[in-house]
Length: 246
Image (cartoon, rainbow, N blue to C red; front, side, top):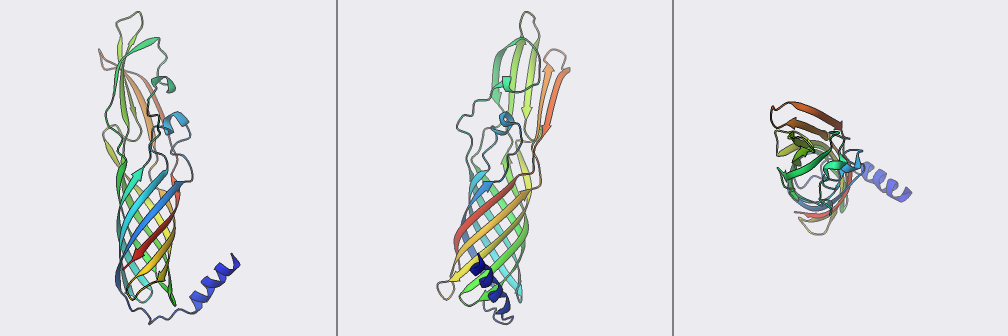
């Protein structure tokens, strides 16, 4: 650790403000992200969402427009892992206290394992011989599948029929857009005249929380007879990345 800190200090003091010989370049990176917390503390609700572990394929455009300062924009495909047991159990959710049997059920939105991500921000480019160090700070957006389930149930010994609706974000949206704050630091090692190997460490904080809601409606008169809601957490992730720049 001490050697690493010494390396950073030496780089900072050896920066040449006029050594910027490359203003535009692309990065291609593969990143693996790990969730630092759950979407929501209720395990039954949380387990329907994808696990906070995903792989990202990213392309980044970089413009070093003034001395050590630059801006970047990137686009990514993210691959998610959903729980292996995707069975949704109505009895796991404290919404209605009735003696009933289930008539039918369906999912209004199937789980999609692929998501699109984009982010924009600024970076600071530190030259240190064959090495570059690039701290980055930006904001991004990601689309995410919004699970939605509906159950029809019938109360025993009566003719009463009810619809039970479950939503994890918004009842009106099949997909939601999540904003996030993005920070990362890339270490780039020169391997050719125009190419470098990249290693990165990344942190993200999502700006929208899960807002789980459940609602029970009488099918005959559309009267809502039961509601339940619970707010989730702000998701935080830590990631590592490998790649190459040209």
